[in-house]
Image 1 (cartoon, helix red, strand yellow):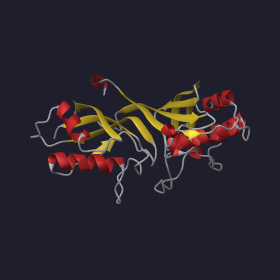
Image 2 (tube, rainbow, N blue to C red; image 1 turned 30 degrees about the vertical axis):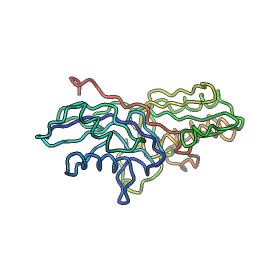
Image 3 (cartoon, one colour; image 1 turned 90 degrees about the vertical axis):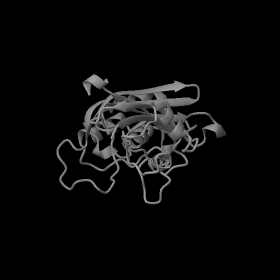
Image 4 (cartoon, rainbow, N blue to C red; image 1 turned 180 degrees about the vertical axis):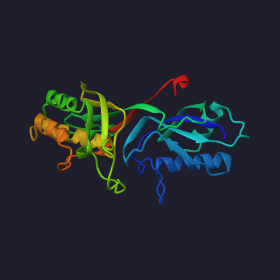
Length: 258
C-alpha cells in the first residue's frame, strides 16, 4: 500500500483534540471520515503528535497507507480531503514517501508557539486563539524564565499524567532536550517558542504557566531551576490555557537521510 505524507493545519477550538475518541469530534476522527468518504473504506492515519482540545496546529503531519489501485495524484488528494473536512481543517501538502517513513518517529524536532495577548481589550477575532493577560508582568523576566528550560532535563515535574505511565519507567523516560526558547513582543502579542526533540502530555502549557508565575513575581528563576534539578518533587500546578498554544513546526531529515 503506497504511503502518503500529509501536512495539515487546523483551528483546534471546535475539536476535542487530535487523537481519536469514542465520541468522535477530534481532528483525527474528522480526517479519517474524509478518507472513508473518498475511498469508501476506512483508513487509519498516524500523526507527528497529539494536541489537546482547543490547541491549534500550523504544521501538523500525518501519514496514511492508501490502496495500491488508487489513482489520485497529490493535487487530487488535497482537493478531495479538503472538500470533505470543515473549513477549520486544511490539508496543505501531500507527498509520497518510503514505506518506512513515520510521521512521529521520523520527526527530528518540533516547535510549539504560545501567544499571550497583552492588549487591555482582546479583539473578538482573537478569542479562542490567544491567552488574554493584560495584567502587569515582567516580560523580560518571562524571557529569562523560558531560557531556564534550554538543554536536556528530566521534565517530569512539568508534565501531566495520562494515566498510562509505566510503574517502573526507564531512566530516560522523562528526559527531553529543548534546543531553543524565545520570547518576543510583537505589537500586543507576546510570542513564546520552544523547539525541542519531544514534548510530553501538556508539557508546553505547564512550562509556559510556570514561567508566567515568575513573570508575575510569584516564583523565581531559582524555583524553576530547582524543579529541573530535582525532578522527583511535586509537579507544577500552573498550566497555561489551551487556546494560546500552536504546533508551529515539525522537522524531518531530508529523504535521503531518513
